[in-house]
Image 1 (spheres, rainbow, N blue to C red):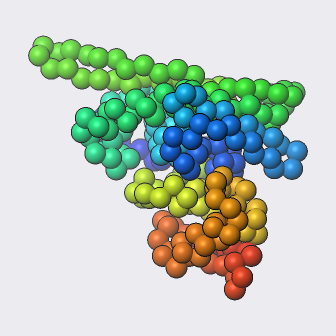
Image 2 (image 1 turned 120 degrees about the horizontal axis):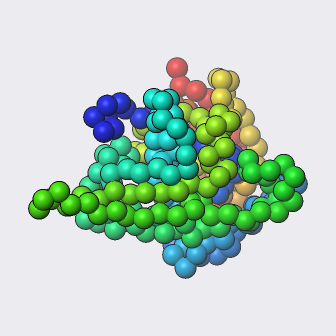
Length: 255
């Protein structure tokens, strides 16, 4: 329950599910270029490093909360506020002091990571080049009620996320997503959720999956990872299969 009134349905943004915007590696400070046909995306980290798939939890939670507020009659704007404890509980995190410090680092990486691209990203189809942050700004508000202190996080999301919410550019995800502890497994879940859609299965060549995943490993190491993940087969909602040579990978909805 959020604020004691309703449970959030978690929503992910489809462009970030399609393309590897978030890093699978912690403390990554290298500029990464992703090219898919005519689309070019440069992900530029800050001094704090590039935003990771685990930092994305803040993003998903904020988007989901705005979408839920809209459904309950609120006016949609780009500013979302939440109590850290609610975020920790909803995303299967500990609520101790370390989690608060890690949340601040996540906010800094999200704000510091820049996307430079020739893709319109729900901004303007006439745009030939654009650069933006994953969140526009953030702040922590300390509140006092007698001797009690509490904190509130306030985030301003970028305009393209605002338009994604308005233009139905979101997909609902399984809350068990937050229990996935391996970065590559989280990314594979996103790809499966985005591309299976209403289909029962989706197949992709290993080389294309490697590109979409944003993996920093070489193709042979990536192939070994996929084989192991297909043996473990513990992703929420989807099973992973590969052919004999692991040249084609298939995601199939669980019954």
